[in-house]
Image 1 (tube, rainbow, N blue to C red):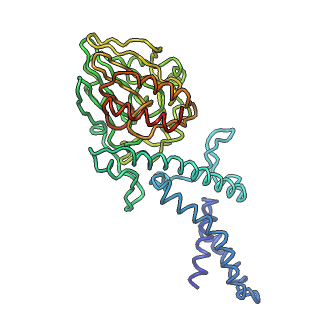
Image 2 (spheres, rainbow, N blue to C red):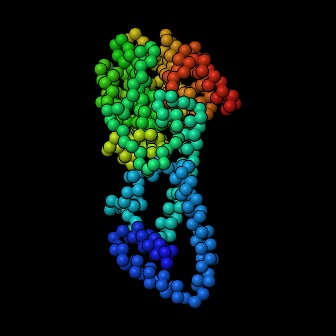
Image 3 (cartoon, rainbow, N blue to C red):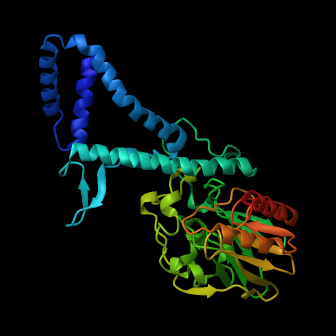
Length: 401
């Protein structure tokens, strides 16, 4: 009796999910009548065990995918917004608006679309989860407990907590009048290092973070003086707040991306989801609405250009490999390298859509020749020149290039 009630109830809810406007009693009545008459068919209960085996054969693979997706891959993706959102295919109709499940719904088409989306999500999640796991093994962030338990999500609920705009950014003064600005709500593997350098006549800022909370509005250090704003490259985690500065400098090879920073070319479409965060940015931020505004003015850089702060000079070194327009900034007087994403003390991303391993190797060899004392990378803590040489040597050895 209990099994029959559960079956009728589940089937009724499935019908209502396909047709949200339907009253509960209508499908429940029809399915209930069919169930009663089906039970009266002679011999049908004799095949009940075979029926259960058939249902199990169909449901076990589906449940396995769901369990793996939830617990091992995409747990962070099951937020409150997803669970409470209205179901829709997400494809606009010719007349505008969204086509909902109830509009011309075809169960076969819906099933195929759902399985296809699930497999794609699982494959993408495995890839990105591997990145996060490797990052957890290769770098540490002792400043926060969340960094020490990276990749682990509490089991107490679906939704991540929301951060506060006033404390979204964190500042850490370092040697040589350099300050690290970062976003502690983002997990270390995805957390961009924003570098501020104090100069006599003007300051320098390299990279701009996610942009979910306006950088220049919330960090007073960036509003005190004239600033030269430089993007080490144009991935979304580095240019989110670039539009907050009057002019942004970037290598000519990626100026077109900065001028029209869509989510595909900036990699936001690939990486931006709950898996990035320990704490979500404050409302009204939502992953689905994330867009990067273009800066009002863009100034291109080339290899060998010099950024002059009055008493400090940084040479632009073109470092393609991670991306075609990646750059590092080299201050010979202090032997300081601001490296961007070509080099940091963690798993390097070398498989983006526009990465190139030959260029990567050439760029690292060029940096290996510098008499570096300290390196400030695009992610993870800064490190010494000795560590820099060791990291480069290991990469070149592993890649045999």
